[in-house]
Length: 233
Image 1 (spheres, rainbow, N blue to C red):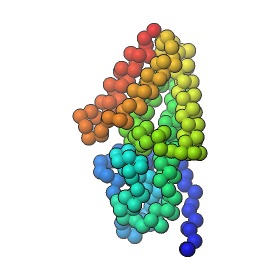
Image 2: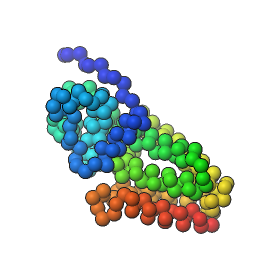
Image 3: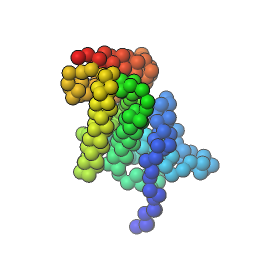
Image 4: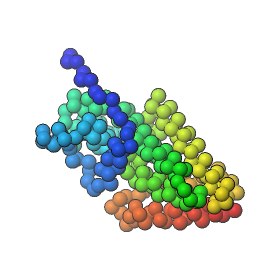
């Protein structure tokens, strides 16, 4: 049996996540493979090629279902062999775990960015709502909501749950800051928080980028509705 190639350690860098998001915002099915043409493949780094694999897998997972998808389909779409795929991702579980981790990292980073911003707590919450919607309308975000919790196992499931707790703690911290400065007025912050998160996560179930509502319109409608909720004693 030939020895397995040593892979560079994948980086969940902010620039890598940004590249994945830009690709996710494009139309198409993720079949724009960097392995088509030797010159083109040499132009992209390990992380960039790995993100193409993850995005292709994410699209298949949320569209078809995790258990109904095989990595052979990823290989067929990108025109690569199984050994090449294994150089970037050993298994479906590894692919799904990294997809969810990337989406969660972007959400957590957005919450922390909002907490550092100047302005009222309400204004910072409105900024966060827009960023949250941007993440949930990407392939990574949709995969996180529709597939991640149900399909990750063992340590991967524990890591996902741990990141959920971090995001919730940071989000509620921002909520408390908004209540403290008087820009948000609610009777029970926990109930309002759960209502907001439920409404936001449901976007992944029904929103289609090529549908009647643009992402910008979607964000404006949600922010307007949730602003009323946040100002209601």
